Length: 184
Image (tube, rainbow, N blue to C red):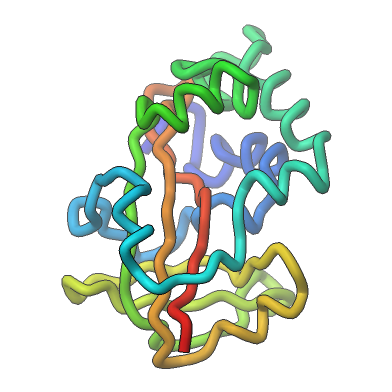
């Protein structure tokens, strides 16, 4: 467990900065070792349609970038926020490193096996993805457009691309970059 208390406490500021729907749930069943670290170009060979991208989300709410960057630069909170290893989050330098594949990425591919209510008061929905290797990955239903939420259905093939950021507390955290769904 990271220093400074529970996992939820340590990641709360970064979750607030990036938005709850865009940080892999801390309490999910998750097998990073079963996922494939790869270049995003691999997915271009599949028949997929993007339904969510981090870039579009950040365009709609630039304050998230500002909050994440402030937390990185805040030396009074040495165990909270991104470390800034690849540049300040969503800065030009960070995006260059991202697109040059200097920031590690993981691709989770599988079939949606369930749609569930989630949250303390069942206020949102999430999906369970049965990974190709048999593991499970869970995440919130997110889409660039509201109509994209209707595409999440049991039995549909899905691909989630995450990137791995180093945190100030020394841990690593996966963040969702893109979700694509198989064309049916």
